[in-house]
Length: 479
Image 1 (cartoon, rainbow, N blue to C red):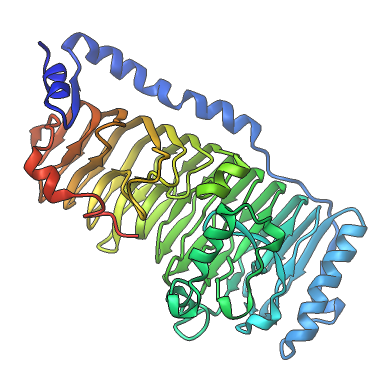
Image 2: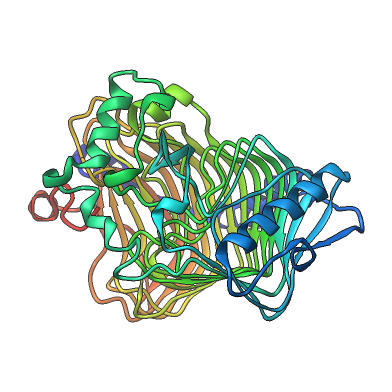
């Protein structure tokens, strides 16, 4: 009987070990793991804009008057769109503004030394159709919003400053989940479960659900390039139900609560490259809707390339989920540099039996991790609400290769359900040093090939029943 078969009968993990004859095949096949990404890259094209310029100063922008600047930006965007497209120029200086609505064929360009400083007053933000944590509703407008547009961009060496802090926006994080104030997050989820249409799920006001920073909704052909983002209320770059998206050369430095860096949700054909993330939550989190609403919309996030990025701090370098009800597939991560004492994990895959969906066909390779506070790879089905929801997620076909980590608490924390194994996690040609604790692997199929842990060749070992009981649902998977 093979070791993998014995482990399967043992109940907690199915572990496979490649024979020596398969080693050459796996090495020769390693390059092939990236081949599908090359096909995806051929489809992703950044939009090109006519050489017309509309300077917001010419439309009445004032460094001392938020109202004038907000109107000037809107007028410049309208004129640019009406002319057939071009560049709306934000010149050097600090410009106070309210929310911005982008239109087709418009490149909002921030010159070097330019800052758009967004209003701290929630009353300045009208209600629009948006998604809050994977559920559609009417809520405060994102700071930069577009709906149903095509060929749009935010570019330049300037800065977007959301001016969020402990007394503006960030203090809403706990309020929105507090039963004393109606628990807006729970209320929204119940509305979705009851089938109330999104346009009648009206929030804003005292509900205090924070807006995202940048949100193209049902858009296509999007470019976000070179800008710096600071002080975001919540998620920074959050395209929803959009396709053909390029995010490159951006720097995100915003460490408030739930300050995810880039969260493509129910999007297809996305390239994220040469981006630096220092965030208060996941650097990149790929999502596809939550619970009933995610299943109602039913659109996956797929065909996403992440390369040459730097993840400094946050909960996960790259996270898949937890809002994964519509499915996540074909995710390719390569040539990234991660790590600091403030980065919890390198690759994080998370869902639960209320969110369901699937996460499959993931390639994570050629990544250098200086250090992580917790795990190099975490796969959990006990995130958030945990078990008992009736929609077991499906996790499978994860390739983890050529990854080097210099310091971690654990290399792997992988936990499936006994009645729903995590399948086909293939780890190969990796080196992990200064790992403090043994890996935890339960109810999962893990294959290891040429993996060195603290200087020795490593093979996965199934967690004992005692260890599994100590680990417990949600034991190391905070919300």
